Image (cartoon, rainbow, N blue to C red; front, side, top):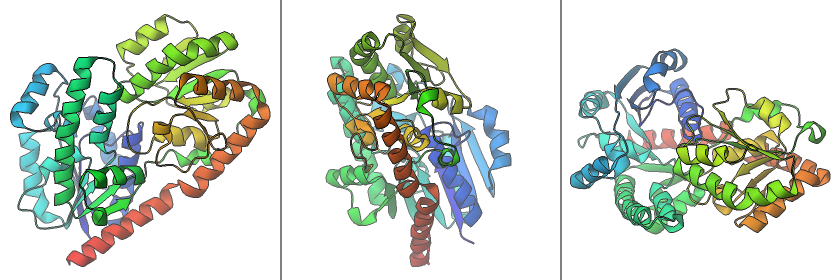
Length: 400
């Protein structure tokens, strides 16, 4: 059985957000097919979950180190002085680097889960190295620079996109294999990466919901549901845009409608927006989303920038809750507008789509069925993980 060292910038547990779901699925799968070692930084409240993670994961060894570097102006300046992107600095620990250097020679392959941990690959490591790009991160910064309203933030984001682009391309050049979503592969190749090294992967949702009974339109209420990480700037930006430009008109047309937003630690800007309208509810972290899905009529994912596959979109579609998103939210997915989901990039388009799904039962039921069928057929974990395993086996076989 081969041995794999899995490097990740945070504890991949509990698997509540899109990135952690993918990382946890990889840990589960690789642990069953290899002697798996894992090294990670501990951020936020990760330390609370380490013991449970050890019990759940099948690991040969686990090395972790708290890394609590805030996102501040001082930290940004420090990253410029060290000539590395901000998030690379915020994942850096000299103690963790020494531990990984000592571990690495015992493993046949190093799997870097996110570009931030590529810094931990020892320069003298002789085995194959895999880069798993959860997103083309330079593209996220670039799009944020183009959509932001604050000139200073737009400039800072533009400069960060250039720094991240250089770092990601250097990681792609060093790696023997790069996993990314189809749209991110195109962006990386356009920026200078070697397409011959790239292999397709996806971020997928909780496919266990596919086994649940279809949602019943008659049992729903005129609720617009959002589920996501409420500290992630792309999510915050999209929700603020929605609440400022879309919701006033929707709320006027449908006086009984509500917006319910599930996610821990909402950004202060979201708390302020919700406080101004009693029909906008911040629910906090919700462990069991099923009751929310059953009573909601429309799932919203109003993203204006980002990269990669959006797990929240797959989750809404997979549960059969008609979903309204944007071109950014649907990129990389084979979605047909108003068949599998509504794709709307302007406020009038978004309002029209929501209006239809709140009132047209036949259209609602058709979209609910088509979206679940698409997810079940094309976006499930089993085939995806098997394909990734085949690529790893081929890489290891070739190097041996």
